[in-house]
Amino acid sequence: MLNPLFSQLLNAVELVISDNADEVAELDRIIGDGDHIINLQRGLAALKVIENDFIEIDWSEALMKVGITLMTNMGGASGSLFGTLFISMAKEAKGQKLDSTNFPAIFYQGVESVKKRGKADVGEKTMLDTLIPVANRLKEDSANNIEFKQLLSNLSNQAYAGMTSTKDMIATKGRASYLGERAIGHIDAGARSSQLIICAITEVLSQQTDQS
Ligand code: ADP
Ligand code: MG
Image (cartoon, rainbow, N blue to C red; front, top):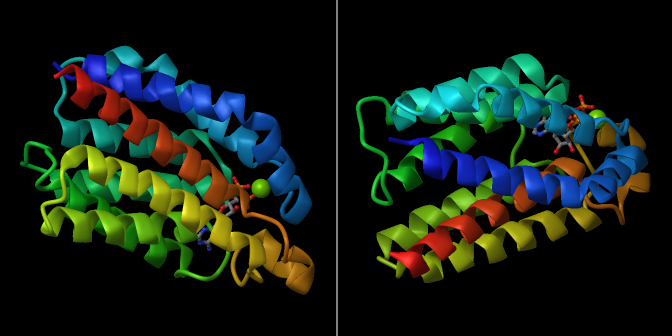
């Protein structure tokens, strides 16, 4: 029975993206082509349509379904990159029951696949400036047995720090790379949306920990 948590996470992500839609749109308008929010909301709407398919499947299948849905519906560079993230996590999670012990390695592998797909790394003013530090922090904190709520809080702080780090960067990947130094002073849209999504997820999980 996966649906309750899946729906909670999906609703929380949809809410944070719609609450911040104008800002994300504006960020991509300034140093990209302005469609990042539309791509993202198209992907989320496609997930909403098939929400009931997530009742009786395991997490690996769920991650695969999310990845394929985003890959085929979103469009843009971010559609293929977010799609890759989830499809790679699904492959890594196959045959395992997802929990806080194995999730760090699964997420880490997902981010590694995004790096390969985007031919990008940290410091290039992309979503990876949020995703890579979060994957590293998750791996490190769980290896150090950091208490779960503290770990969630560390992840959301790390996502925020990664997102803001893109402000002073020159972009070397994606559309913003055409702007050279003119991209300096502006946060990357994909780094911001990734941070918003990660913070929404950690918030749901943190509230759940309070209730259990
Ligand atoms: P498009 O760039 O095709 O218009 P979107 O606007 O939906 O697609 O997504 C743009 C975001 O994708 C950027 O803000 C950046 O975070 C991310 N991005 C673009 N190219 C790459 C890449 N090669 N590697 C990692 N992330 C990238
Ligand atoms: Mg764009």
